[in-house]
Length: 104
Image (cartoon, rainbow, N blue to C red; front, side, top):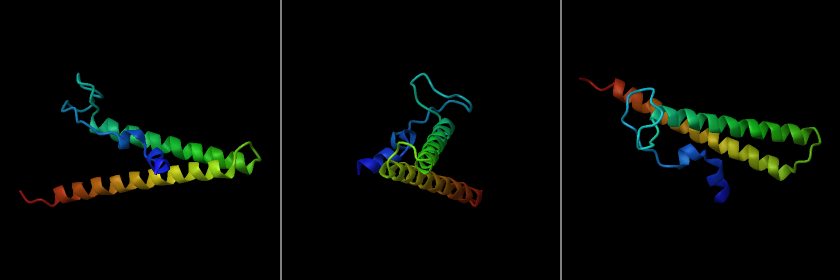
């Protein structure tokens, strides 16, 4: 269970409080993060996990000092984080499409 929690980017795993400020503001006086910045940070964390997994695979293939278990764990963490990011993207897209279909 702890491995799954470590695979989730911290920006996704922590609660989000919307700032209510205008676009382009990263943080409000209360220290809350905008939704845009939250998503960008999550994408960056997933990208970092994937790059780390790629480096671990390259080290293993090149005969580096890395165990196959470490490589497998890094690849699985990156995969879980990526799949979660894709599900979030799908939900956001679906919500947008639902809003587009609302008749005014």
